[in-house]
Image (cartoon, rainbow, N blue to C red):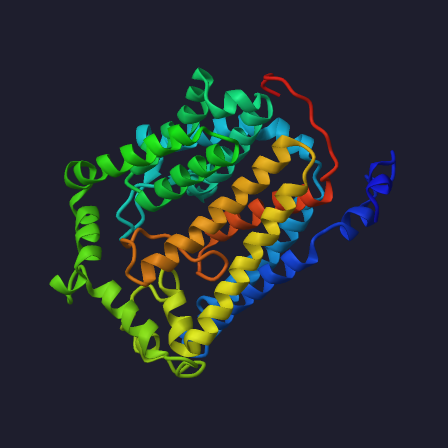
Length: 387
């Protein structure tokens, strides 16, 4: 299908044309990763579809349909929804802090869910989507010089900073970290001056020690100190990281075999179906299996970035790249976490770990990326109007 065919009136809106323009490599890789997740959840449960594997597959099947449906949506609708979506999600985050509707699930350690009566949601997850769209909308309407350095940058900084502070205060450090880093990556991709980037990195390095000592809750501070020396408390705060390292190392080159991972099967490995599922992959399939899975993740990221680079509109480029950024950060932080290279902050491995909110966020994000691919020749108006 040529560019001219896609831009002829009537031709570009045909459903069959849009379906043909989907990137099926990306869709296939997403299905492969989710399928590996289902297989591992089946193994972890003792070769049983319940309680995790079947729910994982049902969720993925439903969200795959949603993702493909969103890919058919013209970017102008994402563009118009950007600011209103961000505003609604920010209100939901505020409601957790200032209304009795916010609550803390048992054992979660953070008040980060909202009970709306008819449903329960985790606004921090969806805030990542809202932030990406809002920042893409802002940068679309401003010049390259303003994106590089201008007093107007106070607006994107505020869009990142306000939800970051609110979510970190819940305290949900993992979601706040993903949110802040995603915003920083988007500002970098939009052309932020290297001097500002260097100053920001220096400021972050300087503020980390006092933040750890005085700005964190005790259990969060213990996680950081445990990351630095997990052997100091091997049966307490260091237990998770130590068991994860044992699972990673014991798999060797080819692994112990499917369903034969002692750390996961005997339940030595904590949160083996969510945060530490990658450790189970390494234990059962070894270095070769885990490396192959990482290659799949890298391929997804590269294909998505390629799609972002092909978009004609600045909004399409920034939004698709931003969605790819938070997916990549999920992979990077979880991978570092299970290997003991980062503190345990409750970040799942996307599409692999069990969990509905994370999977929904990722699949909606890829719906936008695919929409950018299908409508890559679309042009969007400049301007600062709300809708």
